[in-house]
Image (tube, rainbow, N blue to C red; front, side, top):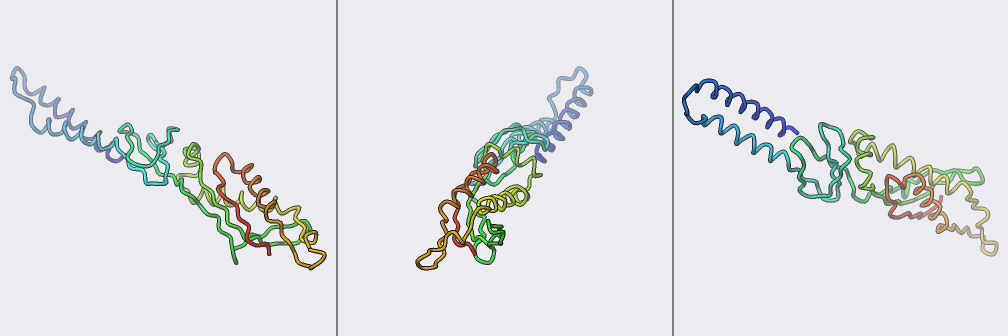
Length: 211
């Protein structure tokens, strides 16, 4: 956008220089001054430069006009836009909600006791909704993650474990506790899809331990 405003300034200077030349020449057919021609050439170069933007790999580009999203998204690489438009980056790479070990997530189970779930959930944003996310969370991907994604994951884990009763999974013969993680994983995925399906794609859900 800075390049565009430089081009606008050069265009104004070019127009002013051309007007002064036109008013001063009278009947003289002298050629346009070199400074005016040079300014016109620089204006064209700056407009061309302002039309190109580079989007890093694994990102999606948000095309903006004067700071507001236009609703158009681009892929990675060199992109061409109108000179007054800009391309903002939005992360579209794979993300990890990694809460294994001591960082496990506290949930309330069916017996009203607390359990701590060690989980790894991989996700990524849906590029077709990048413009809305960029605008709603003030261009801040970390803010989007912290306010939209992480709380939804914690709530979904609580939903999935709300009916979990470890006492019902004790092997009568051995006394061992068997945790059926398969159904729990599917419940977490279903809850996440219901809460975040429009904004992110859930790539994988892994539950490694229920403490």
